[in-house]
Structures are given as C-alpha cells and as structure tokens.
Length: 438
Image (cartoon, rainbow, N blue to C red; front, top):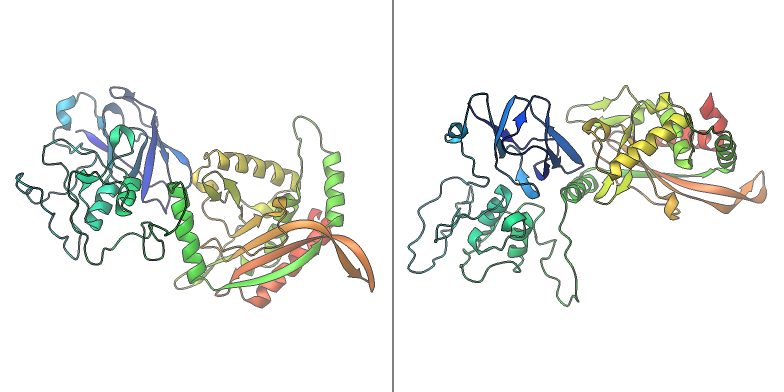
C-alpha cells in the first residue's frame, strides 16, 4: 500500500522543520537509501533518506515551506505496481486540520465560537467561498489558539502559504486581511513561548523605523535553551589570568616547522586552549559530568565542544576524545568542523553531546566575559583576548601577555573547590605549554 513520508525528527530539540529542497520529483523511482530532500532543522541542514523502495507518487509539501511539524506527511511513496489510486485512502492535504463544526451561514460573517479551555479549536480549513487555504499545521494551531480566522491572514510563504511568522504578525496586528472578521481572542490565550507575550511586547511605543527579522528555528532553540540554562542552573564563576608568552613563542616555532601540502597545519591559540582543557579534564574528571534527575552522570570520554558563530547563531561542534589528539590534529579537525558548521553541513553526532564547552571571543578583542552553560553540560570556559599587561613576578614589575579565562560551572555538580582544581591544572599547562606535549 502507499506509504506516507513524514517530517522526521532529526534532532532531540526539533519540533518543526523547513523543507529546503526536494532532491526527487513526482514520478521518480526511489530506492532505499536514496536522498529525497534537504531538511533545515533547528541546528543544521540535513538530508532525508528513503527507507523503502518505490515511486515518489505525490509531493505534499512544496520546497521552501517552513514550520512543518514533526511527523506531518510531506510526500507519498507508491510501492511497486501501485498507481495514483492507491493514494485515495491517504490524507494527502498538506495542512488538513481535525474536523471542525459546520461553517456559519454565508449571510453575514460571524465570530467563530470561543475555543474550549482544554484544547483550542483549530481555525477553519476553508473560507466561505470554498477555496482551499494553504497554511502550515503550526500556523493553524497558533491561529486557533489566538482566536484568529486563518482566512483573514495574508500568507508570505511559497504560493501564498501561511506560515508561523504570518500568524505572529497577525497577532501583533499587522498581517490580517481586511475582509474576513477575526474571531475574538480567548480571555487568557495560552501561546507558545516563541510568540509575543507580556515580557516580549508586540509593539514598542515611540519606536522609529525598524525591520523585523523573522526568527529561524536555530535562533528560537538557542533562545529557549539559554533562557532555561540561565533560569534553572545555579551558575558559579571562577576566573584566572594566564601568562601566554611561552605559549605564543611555542606556537610561532611549531607553525614555522609546519610542512607544506600533506600534513600541513597552522596552530592557533584556541588549539592550545582545547588541548589544555582536554588534559585538565583528564586530571580532574569531576568536571566532565551532567546533572540528571536521580544522579550525576560522569562521562568516560573527553569530548570538547567549541562554540562557532554561524549566520543563524552559535553552534558547538564537538572534538571527540580531544585528550587523545595532538595540536596539529586538533587544529585541522577544528578547522574542518567550523567550516562545515558555518555551511550547515554537520551531522547530528558532530554537534550533539560533549562534556565541556569552550567559548573564545579573544579574536574580537574581548578582555573577559562569563558564558552561559550549554546544558546538559556542567561547565563552559570563556576565553578572552591575550594582551600585554603589567605583572608582578618575583617582587619586580614587568610586562607579560595575559589572557583571562572564566569558568562557568553548574554548582549542583561542580562546586567551587572542584572548579578551582580544574582551573589550576588548566592554567599550569597554558603557562608551561611543553607539559601539553608529554
């Protein structure tokens, strides 16, 4: 029988996705393992593979569509010997909502009935004239929760399709078509955290000209996770100043010895930081943990995540078993991970997990900062810029290149003494980089 292809959950935090591009057309033969489409998740662009053989009978969701809920049908696969009639039993409408009560008489537009308290009634699927209204499932749900007629919203998606951003704009009062009347909003609408709320004003009085930049899935997830982290995790901060003149001299010497062609490398200060963090984690394994409901989970492998800025927001590709890799290997692997992170080409295992994160803003001239923990990890190290500062050594005033590093810890799992032990080990290796080569 015909098989529905559903929007997959390509990451644990994914609730909806964007169908960026179809790689197969209707009528194309499909073999198990063939690439069907490119899906934009909250973290990256992933490829959707076929798991059955057959023919792509119908594309339900056109490419470019946003806000497609996980497990919503996006296409239909026909098995060998089947024709289009096999799809008759399937619901192939891209946005068909659950059944709704009969429409009000056409004599005069009337307000839609108030939504039930437990489950808001989705907006009607069709206007009174009978023409189909194309809207994403999420857009319909948000419209229903806000008490808006879906037919009164102007769509900005492909072929006029209504997407979540259109509903949010309509809620803010800027995207409703004038003809249909909107249903009255419930007295206490329960909107998702990503829609305008009391803490996020829809309009700012007295604001001058502005442009609203719609949130991407990645930006929404970053906002949700970091808000949760800052709210729920008891952050504790420890800062050390590291003299890095010896490290800079070693870096210059090693890069001067780098071969050309195969085996070439160019080591950065951040590569030394990654190496020092990994070796310090080996010495102080108590920081390589996560707070769980019933236990503190300690990880056997030392996997270090490094924050990388991308056009859509920060992503943290992971250097697996970082303590087992030398400086040159660390440098080359991180360059590859960072490049693919910016292109949205990381696989799931390359940015999910990790026991510790490094966030380095030194290249921007930031002297010192405190970072928000990346849950479920317990630690993140914020690295500032190395700059010449006056220092006192052996009772004499001198000049040294100093780099400030601040460790943010989850005080539930890593208390002050344990964090200080880690930072002592880290500082010792940064200031005497030869010990990293042992």
